[in-house]
Image (cartoon, rainbow, N blue to C red):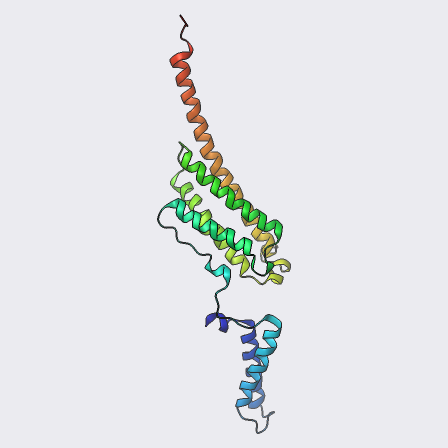
Amino acid sequence: MFRWLNAPANWCGLLAATGVLVLKGLGFLGGWGLGVAALGYVVGLVGGALWWGWPSTKEDVWEALQFEDEGDAREAMGRALNGVRGLTEHNPGGRIPAPLAQRIQQLCKRLEALLDQWERSKGHLSLQETFHARHIAISYLPQALNTYLSIPAQFATTKLLANGKTAQTTFEGVLAELETKVEQLGDDLASQDAQAFLRHSEFLNQKFGNKDIA
């Protein structure tokens, strides 16, 4: 119901009906009854629908892109990444340009690689970094994509926002920030593993490196 009420075509119908009522109140419509307001609504609704499309009560595809951070981390992150990947491949209305879709898919792959690395790693992420790793996949990326797709295509690519950029350029910036953070998390784990390897190598060297071979 809210989706119908908030649709541009419905607003056109309401504005047309209001205009008719104003004309009626000013006496310009003579003996016409109030039913003419309903006619005005229908005319406005049809006109708006021809321009913006008919209102729908069906949930937009991207609105289902909401996931809960609960249960096993890998399962929760996997579900979210599969949802993002599926929506990007579906690309409703061709809203996601090919280069942007490729970046989203690549980020999903990097997050999956981070998961694999995290499971193999002997290192540990801080509580804050663990939170970031989970939420990049479960909420940050899905919500960014969800919000971007809710903006009309023409507006997203041509109108400047308060930051002086279009919505599409802003979304590209968000992706860049997430990409940087994922790389940072991977480097952090790799650095810890490298240090652990170095310590073990030094231990072995101390244990056996200075032994004389009889």
